[in-house]
Structure formats: C-alpha cells, structure tokens
Length: 442
Image (cartoon, rainbow, N blue to C red; front, side):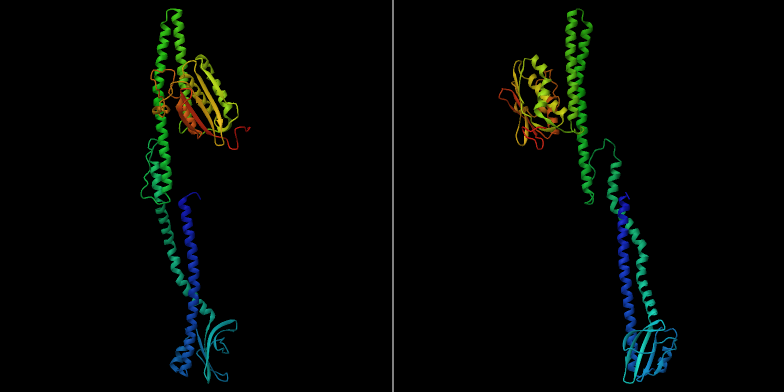
C-alpha cells in the first residue's frame, strides 16, 4: 500500500473498528447483566409482595394466569402441599429453594426466588431461556446505534484524512506548477508542524539549486568573455601569417600564433579544471594518496616553464604523508600553485615547496620570491578571472580559484601570507588519512 491517504484511512478505520467492537462488547455484556439483575429484582419484589398480602386475591390470580406472562407463581403449604399455581405448565419446579436459585426441570432451567412464611412457601419462577433472550434483545438494541453510526464514522474518517493531507497536496500542486526556472521558496505559512520540516528542506534544496545555477550562469558568461579575447587574437595572428611576405615575417608570425594557441589551450584547460571544482560538480571518489609523491609528480609538469625562466625548485617532500583525496584534483591544485609561483617570481628566482604533517593535518607550503599580494587583495585573488595586473597576458586569473575549489572539496584550509623569500606563501592544510601518520605505509 503506497498511498499515504490509504494507509492513514486503513489505520483510522481499523482503530474505529477495534474501538467499536470493544465498546459494543462491553455494552452488550453490561446491558445483559443489568437486564438480568432487573429480572431478578422483579422476581424478588413479586414474591415479597405476595408474602405481605397473605393470600392471592381473585383479581390478582386472574391477572397472574395470563398466558402472555413469562413467569409462574406457585404456593406450597408448610407441609409441602401445592395450594396454588398461577397457570398450568407442563414442567414447573416441584420444590422451592429459598432465595434465588436455578432449578432444572425436564431439560429446562428456571430462575426462581422463594420466600417462606410460617404457613406457606411462595415461589416466583421464570424460564432462564426467556430471560436470556429478553436480555440479549435489550443488549442488541443498545449496541444497534453503534452499528448504524459506523458508516457515518467511516465517511467522517475519509473526510478528515483528506483534510489532514490537504497541506501536502497543496505543496505538491505548488511544485507541479513550477518550471525549471522557478526556484523561489515554497510558502511555509499555515502548515502543520509535520509538513513544515519537509517544506523547509525543499526550500533549502531550491536555494542550493538557485545558487548552483547562478554559479554556472556566471561561469559560462565569464568563460565566454575570457575566450573572446584569445580567439580574436588568434584570428589576427593568423591574418598576419597569411600576409607575411618574407620567411622571417612568416616565422615570427608562426611563433606568435603558436604562443597564442598555447595560451588559449591553457585557458580552456583551466576552465575545464575549474568546472570540475565548482559547487554542484559530481562528488569525487576519494583514495588514499601519498601527498609527497603527488607533489613530486605534479611539479614535474612545471619544470619546463621553470627551466625557461631559470627558476630553481627546492622540494622538501621526502617522507610519505598520507591523505584521502582525489588524485586529479590535488594534482591540479599543486600544478597551479607551482605554476603561479614560477610565473610571478622574477626570472632566476627560487621557489620552495614543502610537505609536512602532524597528528591532525598534512601541510603543503609553497613560497616564492615574487612581488607577493597585499593583504587587502588576498581575498579578491580567489575570484574568477581576477588579475592584479591587467596587462598580464600569461595568467588566466583562474589558478587560485581552482586551488580554493579543490581545497573546499577536500575540507582543507587555505591561507595566504608573506613568504620568507620575499614573495607569497600559500599554505594548505588537509586532514590526514585515518590511522596514518607521517611515516606510515599504505
């Protein structure tokens, strides 16, 4: 049964049925007991009345002889002789037991009450089957209203269930009316306490979706804007190559075009890397990694640029440092930090990369001898396509944005500070792998 309304209705109707059975059963037994007690009271009162009268008057005897009466009056003398019977009967009790008694006569049970005087014994008896039938009839008449009202109770339960679920239906209808662009919060007023958490969770989800879509729209707009300039430059460089008259001009145009293609390719690569680190990107599969080994491998990709600028790398990553992370994302993080350190440090400068660990975290520290970043701008450099020097054509303005995205996906802490080398120090603290220390093996 998948319908919530059907489940609630079945539960309510089941409870009503159980309650009706319990109440009906208790009422039936109670009314039967009270009716039989009333019959006993009538027997007793009639016997006592005849005792107090001394004899049965002719008019009273005629009334007691009515065949419509279901009880019989008998009187015996003190020596046991039957001196009176209200009416003839084939199987009357032939003895009297003082007080209340159940007397069996020819497979029929009589309920009797007998009282004695000095001269006689008076008994009023009634067939037990008649008493029980009358008591059962009275009991059924008391239970009958419950049976008659049961369909109305079921209809009321159906209506109340629909009324209770109406807020859910209203929320569902509101969601159905929306399209992919309608991400406004759902109304949360006049909702029962049980529905409010659901609507709050949906509103939180809609808010996250809206932020994710806004981020994607901004990313696409920024990417389109940033790609326009290098593509335009490539067109101009191609035209220069086509108009070149001499081998020297053609060679220079080809070198310029190759450099432009490399810059465009780097920008596209950075854009793709950034897209994988943006909020809302698919969650990565984490694996246990040696951060020292990963740094050594990632830095190797930056060595050609460092050699071209005569930059010296000093790498302090000799001991294994184990972390749980995504290899491709962390490699991109290290390459961007190393690439930025080389690009923004003077030619012939030194760049240091250091990997260390303590009991709580693994640390990657990158120092360069460049111009550094003033404290006032250290938050802005994480924005997409932000460049401190607008004339800088080598940078894409995405390196530190990618670094921050990867750090956030790994629950890491990223800080910018002044370096002892005179430039910028970037420190990244990652949680160490569970059960792993500085010198642990995989």
